[in-house]
Length: 215
Ligand code: 5GP
Image (tube, rainbow, N blue to C red; front, side):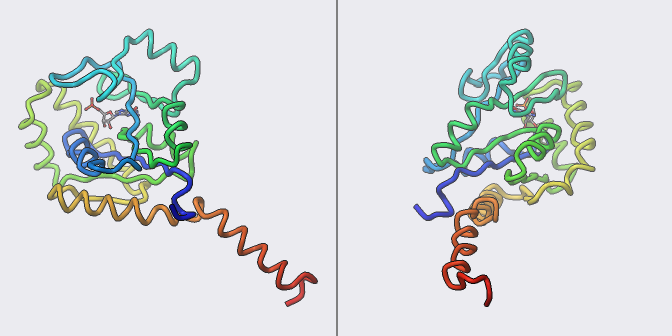
């Protein structure tokens, strides 16, 4: 393990509902024990095939509120009538193990993470176009018409926040998008916030070489 890998890094992935974030993250994770995925809490009802504790922790509104009050969440937000939150302790445990932690969260939550964890790397996934996003949402048949409309409106509401992300990936083709995400994750390890030790060593090397402070 190189020095740059010792500390786990925090990665936020956002993008409109239907853009394929779930698939990209699944692909990215394949065969990689260094990547940890934070399982969020939500008040949304499970979709067909979703497993409690794997896709989400499905909780009641009361339980969610209790966790808000006890400050269990690193961030939380409302999205399409439901609440979603990231467990602070889960994220910290993975980061402490040196894992790269991926959060699949919407824009409001991502902005909270940016405030609380300036070291986090924020990635926004774009669909090739709005038309394609619409077609994907209608095509996956997991939501009713009203919910799809709500999600499309939310996609539009994201527009002003997109430039605040560090990286943008267009999901035209899954393999290519996963490759781009992988490159971003690799590069992010060399961000200065993860290289404090090297920076300090370099600073100290000045003192060793020039104890008087004079070059
Ligand atoms: P879905 O209901 O389609 O699974 O998720 C709806 C939206 O909620 C997605 O944009 C997803 O990224 C976001 N989301 C999932 N978990 C969290 C979370 O813990 N916090 C926040 N802020 N958003 C989340």
